[in-house]
Image 1 (cartoon, rainbow, N blue to C red):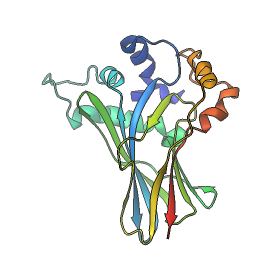
Image 2: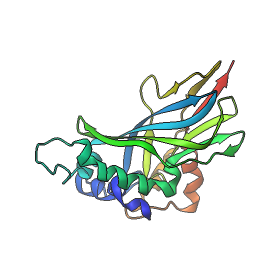
Image 3: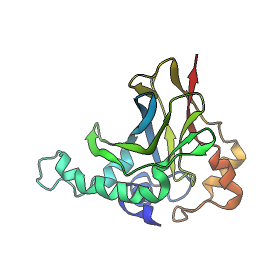
Image 4: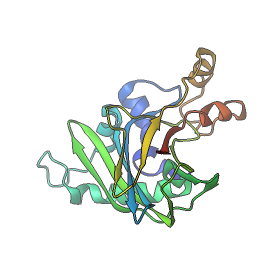
Length: 217
């Protein structure tokens, strides 16, 4: 799989080597936030901010401090940022914009960068829509990994922000339903080197989308 390259692909080793867990999906934990960028009343782009768990960040950052100053500069992190944008592209960047029931095409990412703070890597990137869509109640944005290799959460009081003039419309966060104990037990039995979920679990994982919906007065 292409995703084996880069920050997400390192998850298997990070979990097995640092966290001591060789089994169970997911393998990476991410705290996220979303910004919806509005231009002329339309959604023009989506900005994701993903902060990775500390054990995974520690593994992914190995060998990047090339000048030995115990700090990771933007220049030192740039090659890893590039690799991750390439690796995420075949997976739609785990970001799905639906307008009026039709999925919108995304353009190449812009303004992307990695940063390290408090022992956690944060990846920030913006995805332009190939064609902007009206910012109205027909709009939904989902963030998820359909294979549940990466588990997302959107903590805090502002998991979604709107930048730009949105008129009388606002975005709200709709968390996914929780998995039941039986599904969690099945996920726990999947070997760490198996990246594709069994067909019987794919529908369950698809229900884990973190959804941002637009409501208008």
